[in-house]
Image (tube, rainbow, N blue to C red; front, side):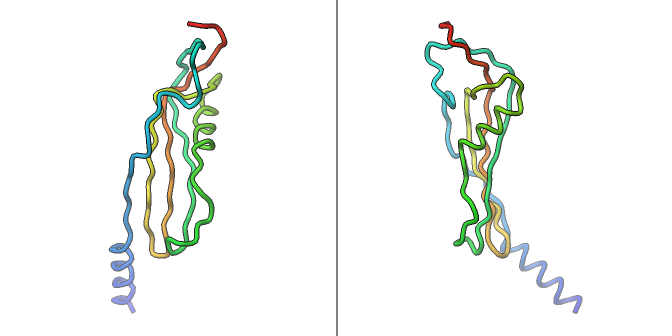
Length: 114
């Protein structure tokens, strides 16, 4: 019984894994032309979902949700600049978990031109 448990754990760890993939770069999350920007911090947001047997998804990655989460963590934040995104895939025995991470500098925008 103990040998079977060890074998199952070993096989599960062999078919599990994790990988990070760059998903994109952007100068800003919203247009900042003709607006005064003040950097108020740096933040990261994420969204994710689980896919059963890597075929049946229960959700989808949401860039907008990740950006809103990041800007909400910094008081007075209204947009992100110097935005980078990457995706993490974590494979487990019965499927995979995909998480989208978005990070950047949080800025406060005003309508006054620079």
